[in-house]
Amino acid sequence: MTGSTDYAREYAQSLSDPDGYWKSVAQRIEWIAPPTQIRDVSFDTKDFHIRWYADGVLNASVNCLDRHLATRGDRTALIFEPDDPNAEAQRITYRELHARTCRLANALRNLGVRKGDRITIYLPMIPDAVVAMLACARIGAIHSVVFGGFAPQSIADRVADCRSKLIITADEGLRGGKRIALKANVDAALALPGTNSVETVLVVRHTGAAVAMQMPRDRWVDVVVDGQPDTCEPEPMNAEDPLFILYTSGSTGKPKGVLHTTGGYLVYASFTHERVFGLRDDDVFWCTADVGWITGHTYIVYGPLANGATVVVFEGVPNHPDHSRFWRVIDKHQVTIFYTAPTAIRALMREGDAPVKAASRKSLRLLGTVGEPINPEAWRWYHDVVGDARCPVVDTWWQTETGGALITPPIGIDAKPGSAMKPFFGVQPALVDAEGRLLEGEATGNLVLLDSWPGQMRTVYGDHQRFIDTYFRAYPGMYFTGDGCRRDADGDYWITGRVDDVINVSGHRIGTAEVESALVSHAKVAEAAVVGFPHDIKGQGIYAYVTLIAGETESDALRAELIAHVRHEIGPIATPDHLQWAPGLPKTRSGKIMRRILRKIAEDVPDQLGDTSTLADPSVVDSLVRNRRGA
Ligand code: WTA
Image (cartoon, rainbow, N blue to C red; front, side, top):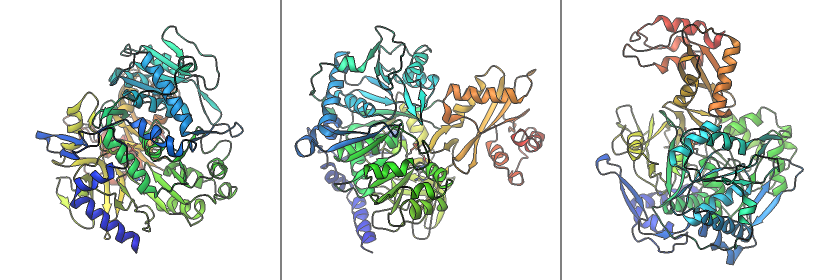
């Protein structure tokens, strides 16, 4: 098979001469000063550093916009499909996107924003979100996009952590016909402690709803950009200058600010976007992620726009007004590459084939998935029904931390349903056992990466030690992904899911510690332990065990109140699916909660609890098993 020979040859070359390989790949983007230094990496915790293209100078927005003006200025950059299917779609050319970005960038500079300042973006999936990100990149400000589904406390935590100077939001968002009070959420966030770094709130007029404007802090975007020139001098950025921060959940504590820098990230985003999807010039690329997640950053904004591609920006949801929505949008905009999450595929599969058949989907030529393991049944349905058995499926494994796809089926190779298949060029995955011994051949273990790639995160914002401790301490000299994985006899990789205390709910990462701290922030809760459990549609669901403070009474009303409290503190994505009263939690004699046992109870496999002899009080387990799900 030529696909596999071509892949094997290029992969071998990428490892035998990484400097030569990544030097030549870097030529795909436009540099103000091309890099002469390529790779400078040590995963050794005593001499830790990750630098790529360290003497290169560039601007990401120039690569995504200006660079295309001469050759494809009139090409559509964004196709905006609004939430309401009867509202008019918009097509925005590269020339228009450039002008809009420059106007906002000028306005930001006028408001005192300078290189290195942090800007929080809390917007719906509308073109203004892309404009806001690129405007920050243009002037060297570091954007931190916060998903529009997060609650005020989560916004406040993220604003406080990076000391944002300015927030860009909208009056409201729309999702499936429902209005989301974005500006009101920002107001509530800014009333919380730790947020006094914010000087200005820019508000996009989206639904036109009346919102409270607090002068002089709050300004309408259309007013501040009015009269701004539609060109703007780009800030020259060193390759290792930060491009953005994106908060993601880990196994402990508050979400961490994953920091990506400019040169390596942009090279990796654009290169993977072309090679993972086999991009062609006439493609219409649709990634259904939200720009609030890394998938949106890399495969809606930076990768596709650096490649001069046409991308769909979709504000809506897959099940509104009906379950044909995705497939009709594909027909309407003649989408050729469609990239979505397994959870959406499973939810739509449940509705049967008819909603899919209501659209022709003839324009499609490639399908992709990301965010969580895809079960073979869902993969087959996606391939056979959505893709009419004629479109390859690429199951792309990666993380916020990795910047772009790392394990993915090479174009031209038949993928196995449920397997992410092979490492991308330059990427060296390996499996280790609990002691860190490398496993050879067919094996199951913890997934690590033996060497760096240009899109790798560089630090946890404001806490470099946490970066080193989280990813490089468990297995010295290697990056630990937090995922479990199996490698089959052909050397193909099958990701099995997180092995740490991160839950993957519908492709969204949620730290058990975050949900626990939301629960214990309620006055009636003494202690809480949260685990994931298998869920047919979401992949994993959230299962909470709660101990009330003495004197409080368990009731269905209180259960509902606690679930609502978590939604209110973090956002709807963190809503517990089950909340079980736990008069006691299984703890070791040193007081550590044994989550392994709680996971088995949540999974309803009480015969697999394993050794409980080290528990301080083994009887709490019997009581939890008896009262599973509060039954
Ligand atoms: C999981 C999303 C199996 C994995 C890009 C990883 C996957 C976490 C896949 C990162 C896949 C992502 N197959 N599991 N194709 N893609 N994951 O940071 O557990 O939101 O560690 O990045 O999602 O989630 P994140």
